[in-house]
Each structure stands twice: as C-alpha cells, then as structure tokens.
Length: 369
Image (cartoon, rainbow, N blue to C red; front, side, top):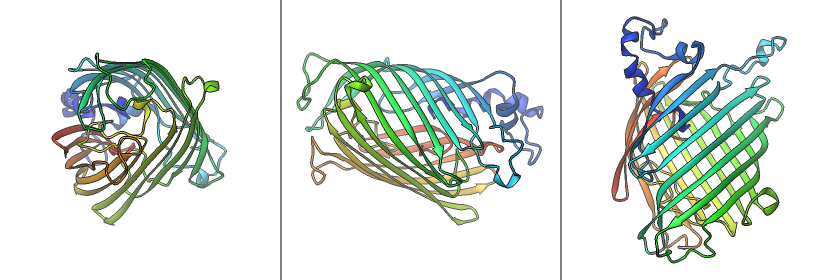
C-alpha cells in the first residue's frame, strides 16, 4: 500500500499534540494514531519518502481516509467478522531524483461483514528505469502511461476463500535511447496492456496490516486480448503465499513463496520479476520468476518489534534458462512500532543488502502485500 506512505514523518509532525495527550492511547499511555485515523473529520496528510532503488530517492504526499466497515445490525454477533479490514481511500503522488513521478487514487472497501472486497486504482506514471538484458548491462528507458485496476472478490459461504474478477489496463509509451537493447523482439513504443483475469484468495490472517498468525494466498490467471483493449495477446499466471507461525509469545516466523509465469507476446516491462528487499524492482525480469523469503520477528517491548529477513529468487525463460539464470538475493533487518493499536497498523524501516547495493525502505505494516 504505497499511499500509506511514511507515518514515521506524520508521527514527528504531531509530536507536540502527543505531548498534550491528544494522540495518547488510553489503554497503555503510548503514542497512538488510532483515533485520528478512525475518528478524524476530513483527511490525513501523509508525507512519504520514496526509497525504491529502481526509481531513486524522492518525496511524496498522500491524503488518506480510514473508516471501519458497517456491520449488519440484524446479524448475530457470532457471525460478525471482527477482523474485517478497514475501508481505505487514498490520493497521492511522488517525484524522485531520476525525474520519475506518479499520481494515483485508490479505494479499498468491504461490504456485508467482509463478504465482498473491492479494490480500485487509477494512476498516471512517468518512470525512468533500467532494462537489464542477457549480458547484464543496463539500458535506460522511460515508461509513461495511465493505468486502471478494478477488482471485486466474493467470499465463499463462511469460508476464508474469496473468488472474483480483476481487470488491469495500462496505456503506455516506452522510449529507449538511440540504440535498442538486444533481445527485445517486436518492440513498440506505444502499447496498451489490458488483462482480464480470475482471482482466488485464501485469507486467515489475524490482522490485515501486520499479521502475527495465519495465511494469505492468492492465485490469478489472466489473459490479454484485443477484445479487452490490449494491443498484444498473452497470458499470465501468478501465485503467492504468506504464512505466519507464532513460535513463542514474542516470536513470529514468516514464510513467503511467490511465482509468476507468462506466455505469448508480452511486453518486456509487463513480464514477471523478482521482488525482494535489497533488489531493484524489475532488475531480474523474464518470462517466469520464482521467489522465496523468510522473516523472523521479535516483539522486544510493548508496541516495538525488531526483525530479520532474507530471500532469493530467479527470473528465467527467455534471456536465461532456470539453471543459468543469475540468483537474486536480499537480506537485512528492520523495526516496527505499533502506531495505531485499534487497526493493528505498524510503521518502521527495513535496511537491506542485495547484489551490489544497499537499500532502505520506509514500511507501513508488513513488507509482504
């Protein structure tokens, strides 16, 4: 959830009010933004630090509005899903030192005691990125466009399973320098990516933002065709799963697996890629990708958590075979502070090391989304 941004900065801006007790939790006397996020009138400005190595460092600003889902007043209390995530509306933008920028509007909403989940996103981007070919050298390019995501999921009976459609559209323009990199077949500057797909989710997390136990898994099968608005025909299948295991009252082990596969005439920038802390997004990108990661978390003090993580992945299928593909890796450490107890919302920083680089990330909640 990029638009949640950096609540760390928000906390520093409201320090005076906290001293007066306005942002103090009555339960433990600690600094807390729950009432501001859930009961404030209007929107919350959230300054953001952009720390993704792929686009460089920069700043952004988001405007957020949280509401809690309304329960059916006639429903038995035993049937009310108390862990239903909050409704979130966000408007934001960012700019970085590489002259990359983006603006977007998002809304997440649940109805009928979390039986229906809706996600909508619309945005415009202008990104300066690098393409990495088979030889490993980087080629600068510019990717600009307008995109839309629409998704509705329906819970199956009273189970943790959700099923529904997703539609993704990007009207893009891509520009390289005077020399086109080797390996880009049928390259076109202007392309429309329009995908329709079926999404299956499994969700037993005890918290939407920072789970301490449970599982979240998602499978999606998508097709891009002219009838959907796409300028090229291709297919994609993705699957990801996160599982959190309480090892002791203060210790949690998290495990992650992430896969993506593609077939057909897929644009190079839309291919699956390895996503790990410490690794630039889209640096390891090809027809297919496999990624795994583990994270160990320690609740070192009330509201405070420290964690260590590490993972590896491969992208293969066109530029490399799976055996010859270079291995991407990332590892590091971080911390979180429980900034909004009523939401289970944490904030903090992760510091990571990857191939040839260090990186840090301002995180809101779990890094796995």
